[in-house]
Length: 188
Length: 308
Image 1: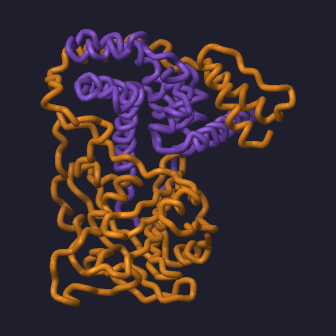
Image 2: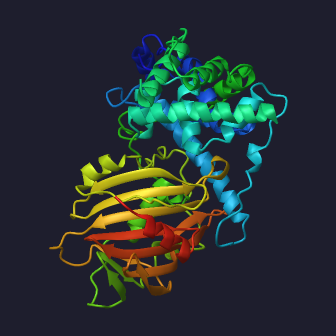
């Protein structure tokens, strides 16, 4: 089993066919879209930006499918590595814009939340995603890999370089912190 | 059952829920664990991809009409997101992974020089020189533009090793900060023994407001082989001012605004950023604290709090 959610049936055969016949990529795309999108959505508070990142992930996967080697890693590991790289580039772009707005200030920069962390109205799970956005980045990532990507702790460890034990600890802490964040919102 | 067991049990129950099953915590589970499981159940039930059919179809169309040529297996073998090296553009970003690459470039072995030519100060295994830094040479220049067919960037982030794991790799006890400015957290710890015999332990602390860090402090605890020929830890700091200071009761150096980091601005040009460095030698280790945000006084507090 690749993750908490099963792999695509005959996944290796589907991948081999998709390498030769581009149309066959659809099966992989349909199977992984929900998990990739959910993972990205946990990481990127803005829905439009999350859509962009998701699109980049599958476009990259489609272009570079020939380079995937099943002997090196599970397909989900390869695909979620693409996703993490896309998120890394997206986040870096946000940080660059924030740095440039400081006009060469030296010292502790402005700590105001970035605009993309603003409240998202009229969207399902808005309160949940807002609370997730307030978590430290690493906890948010582990949470996203578990509940968005539905990966096992072993797969998460492979992707992040953490140990499985680290992942379990961070996950537990992240969920507890998320619950506390949501309780504060309810009281407010 | 201790907390670690509950953490592992929690992960197992979450996996069970994600696979469609029901959780089964024992009655004697602490209230906190049960509450966490309730939160996990809510997360499991939250289908964030619901209602995304239009997006799904849009991406499907984009892929179908993609103009990019799908690379053949023989010509792109090895072109794999799992092992690709970052492009120069991405090396200039403000992040733990690329920061280490930037520092590595600055620490590259020097060209052959006349003895003492350009050497400013030496302390421990580190030699500071007035050579222009790599970032200065690129300052104001357009950063490389990525080829859209370029392989994916995978600057692998540093790991978060435990102190014990880092110590096992380095072969010596690892120091950690006991005091940090508010908001700073341990994010990465990595260790390596390099081919030239230099052993490095790097610990990253980041300030993480709203989940996006802005300030960092990187602690290096390195050893240099005694029989090395020539300087191994040569750092170009250009004309950054260097001051003598006392750190933890021993002589140290404070370098202010060394231009060793760069970012790419919205026009696509490199902008150099200065970093502050506190360096000293103690117990056979060369310690350095590097930061983009803290003053000497703040760095001295961190240095003073270091312990095994």
